Length: 591
Image 1 (tube, rainbow, N blue to C red):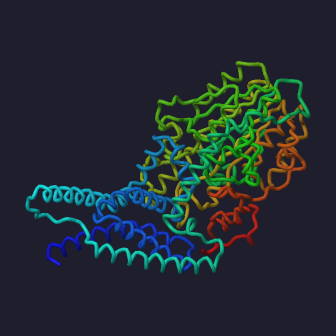
Image 2: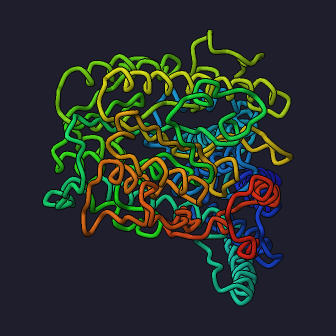
Image 3: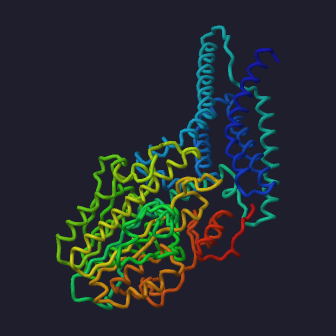
């Protein structure tokens, strides 16, 4: 072998090793953060290294294959950002769904707050891509010189046939060895699978599931074309009736003074007459694109597979003769929620779509609600979807509601926790104002009226040593699961239906969930549907049964919340608050 050939080979191998190393970083991180057995850790290191090596051996020019491998590096970068945000777990199916249902301004806000993670992935992957581009260009240049009979002096990043055979042999050995360790993991736990527990197989698998769910949501309108609730009314007041459902965003019960929080974040609701807080409500999903459809439809965790085949609350009330309106402060996002929203007689986007999220204050729904209340004499169902406490939190309220300071920050880090928490609490303080104004509007209409508020899920705000932030993580926390919910009844409602307030009071301390909102709204208006309304799920019925603590996993499977990824910190908090759960079901399954 000539000296120049040896230098060529060494340079090519250096590029291959660098590519393999940066692609392996997510596996190393997951080996530390996930409950993996030693055999799984070894398999998750050996198999990807072997496959990366085999990939680079496809061409004599490994730089070309590295460029074709950019999608894998993008997935690696995405995985590292997820690990930075949530501390553990792989890129979930819901994460890919969030990519296509999150507007650009939301994404920009998030990226601006996690720039350390962005810098890290740029430092890791961009140099490899740049080096591969440069080397590919040099190879083309030198090949052109050879074709023209000119002298070639630059190094070519190529491998000889013999070196490629060696690389293929090494890659096969590594893959086979890794497979042996994977089989050992499977023998120890039959739930182990490559497409669930080894990166990047699991991420590619989840991407495919996300596409499948997108397609199911796309076909939803045709699936429910001939659907009917066959609804009937059991009782009426004889007066005009108005029912309002307000869906909050990323608001957690832990930070409401209505639920005992040390700061006075809900002073107006704390003293509102006719308001009955539900003390023990858990969401059945920590992602908006699942939790809101669960709230709006007759599907719940135990029957989640029906969510693509049933209509929602607007259609139910329309069948009962109500005029229905949907006011949303969130942009359309091509999700199942949009299809359920479209079943209303009127759909209003409170904030023009041309505006940025920074201006999306929920107070903008109030004039629209006032107009609807006065525009018709019909019985009404109004559903309001707020922007609530969606990050970045300090942009969710006008400055006059900045009760706690400092609160203006974009950096997501433990050192900024005080400002992040202040901003989050201010967003709830503003939510308290908006909700009290909605109640005020209903009080002034002099009709039989009731309002139900519930948040779609909660939020982490770096509350403990885990330093977790936001929501929609593949594994949950207490802060994401326990959500605020209450029912407000007008004086006229209590006069015409005097038994309901006492029933709700009796049920208010029972375990409840977002999966019961559909049935509860139907119960408030005394709607019945033999196949789709269950009284045992309605907070308004004396037959209401305490909710099973179910959670819809990333695979759309209903599991007990104790299997949703909770940590010891979460268990202690739930115990201290007297929330109902089965501690015997808690345990970390190792794969």
